[in-house]
Length: 584
Image (tube, rainbow, N blue to C red):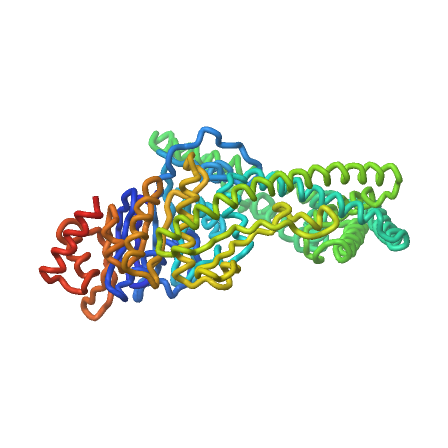
């Protein structure tokens, strides 16, 4: 549940701090007041695209943050590996090593005038993709012009699987199907034309032989570069070290650093005997003398070990040439790390093993594929059977809700059709054996047709509300759906009794979920548990948008404005009557 939202310098909003309650919350305001800006700021916070145009004029950055209560921590949180898919917000946080307190998490996002943005979950910086992935467990935003999930047939399966409680089972099926496809690819490689395969084996054998004979060592390229630099700069290095030796201890006139310090030590000892407060300085001078003496000795030793070895320089350069040529052949570029060549060797050896055309290996693989294929097909059929049973109930549930939302006589069907094909991998997809699509007939006598092609914006809004309603009713645990749902002007193209029905349904939907809705209809707004007003103000020639919760008489006035556009006594009385009747 979204508990609070803080907005600073986002679009026309200079500063806003809004607290949200549970249940049904309505966001209202006059046309052009900026109701969509609040949703825009929230979308930005949840990982939406960011641009400098979102920064309020005259500001240097926009900052949006929000606190979310995740609810009671489920008892069956799994310990996931990197490749596993989290099923809820707690599993996602656990997988990414992010700790929270009191089952609450703070999200924060910034966009700066130089175009750079930053995102945080708690105190942990994250990528925009990570933020968007995590926030998908928190909020579902359905916008007036954003019916993506209903317009994409590929998303219809997710609605049905969610309703049927099959999401985890289908995820497991996908892994099984991927294993079958992988084994088939290996078998196909083994069954390729012998001539082509033989040529590939020859090329791989040559590469393995060439790289293996080089006897490469990890990081050898960088080590050789360092050594080559030392050997090729020998004269300069020797000159520099000799200058250091001369300065530290080699001066014939006794003016070297070490000899000067040696003399100063005696003077310092004499001074400290006269004034004990100088004792510590004398000791520090002793330390400096011993440290520089030691440094001087090490430079002398290093100087004595310096020997120009032209033969070793030639060997190093020859080795560098060899590595350069190997990188040119087997790495992404000649400047790539040597590890790429070593990885190529490892992969080439694995591929050679896979291309071993022994009859035993092929027979074993064919047997594994046959057994796995049977398992995949049986599981796909079992999932399909459960989907078909759930599809009937889901269709009936949607029709019932649509009838209450002013679409009586509408027929709605979740069509589950088996894929065509001869092979198991042709009949199946990573998600099973079914093609799933929502069909609708909004007018009596018309045949069922694809929802995505014929439904109007108002119809799509009500279909979505119907789906959200029955999904919530089917979720007895409260763990499989998001805690907050936002409907941006779901009342498009409707009014009268239909609006009243939508208000009732949003109220019911909010019994177990937090529901936020932008609306201009009073017949929806009166059902809300909370109401937030968005209004535009002009001060000193600058336009800004203000956001605040309204209560008591202020809410009565806002409902009156939504009813008739004014605050006449009749409008106010009508507003009080509606709030009294529907707002309890």
